Image 1 (cartoon, rainbow, N blue to C red):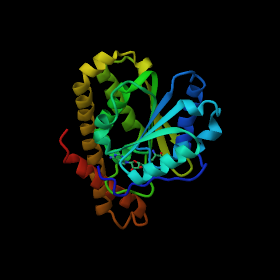
Image 2 (tube, rainbow, N blue to C red):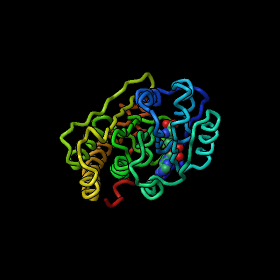
Image 3 (tube, rainbow, N blue to C red):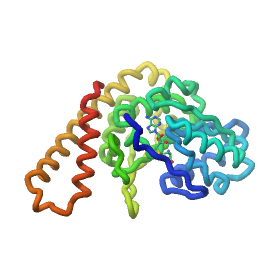
Image 4 (cartoon, protein in one colour):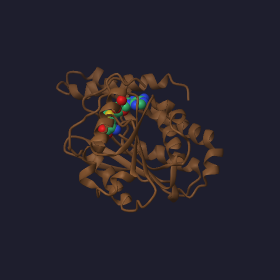
Length: 280
Ligand SMILES: C[S@@+](CC[C@H](N)C(=O)[O-])C[C@H]1O[C@@H](n2cnc3c(N)ncnc32)[C@H](O)[C@@H]1O
């Protein structure tokens, strides 16, 4: 997936809602940090906006025990994140690469307490989603947690980006969970903000109650069955998009004034059309 239009915000000390919920989870986990380092992998970390308010959130005695690993395709963004980390005495390292190379660039050892994936699913595309979730999962420590957040619609629009809605993410997660072999029911929450609607979910490896060996043994099947389900979902979304564009084409005069929806649909059409060409 192209990241031509991708941007990452950096605003000193500003806390965005997507980061606040992740930080609230961390706040709870940090209180349990004793002797071991607490390893946090931030996938598509951008400029590290999430750490910009870390020093306000945690007990200063805990900061030296946290190790922040920021992964992103954009080296300049990561440089900003590393400068911020050093300003607050947070141990940090960066991994530069495309998301599809994350399994090769980040050691497979189950070393992470927390993996975050914030505001990026629409950019990496749904097909990579299953693999990224799986690879993040096997890198978690026994009590590790994955946190995923994204928006149902992005503004400004990005060419090639495909936002998913809460229901679509829930269906993907149900397929993923069932291929993992867990009896756990996934939960995806929807948040209606004043300017956007977003969704988020967490996965705790302990709660899944599936052995790491069985996860690894079934890796190909887990990823491919989830991707196949996503392919069906993409086809359905494409059909709905065409139907809607067809309506706009036939009834232009009645729908005059609805330019924003038409433009949004055209962006969606392009993203879906590209995805249909991908073999899964
Ligand atoms: C909207 S920003 C979100 C940044 C950060 N997670 C946050 O919440 O502030 C999206 C980030 O994803 C990165 N990104 C997009 N596609 C990527 C890909 N295929 N591989 C690695 N990083 C990618 C971009 O470089 C950008 O930093």
